[in-house]
Length: 179
Image 1: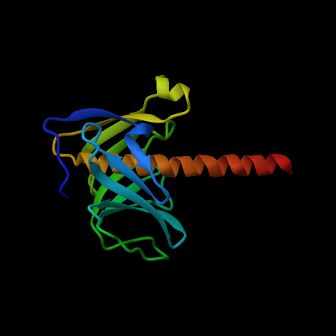
Image 2 (image 1 turned 30 degrees about the vertical axis):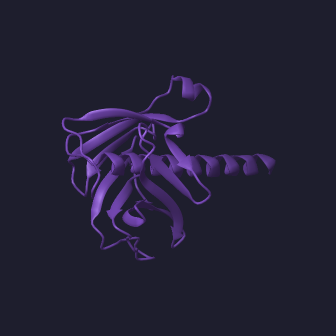
């Protein structure tokens, strides 16, 4: 992809005010110039939430959660990937894998492709001003050579997927409490 890579590793924070949510998309903006770095669009493919990361209108990556995973793995595939509806597999190259923590699901290790080469990691900032007001904030470290924008976009998608899961669990608990 054509996104900048840090050299050496770089740590940055992302918070809800660093991206803009439109009706059908999220825009990741450069904090200094307000330049659009990428757009994230959500869709459903074969009943699974799928996210497309676009740059200048071209889909550069597809993000999707594994159906079954101990680490709640989310994978980022090259281009606009298509998936087998039964096996959930694709022929598109895996660019990144994001592994959530077993206890702290928002803490994430990020690996290059299908390898064990770590290209970044993040953790949720728990005791910060934004957290006191219900905003999720993350500190993300990208190793030298890592794709900063792709990793940040993937973390935003991971936050969206986690929020959807939290909302579904809360709705299920409320429905069970009514019975």
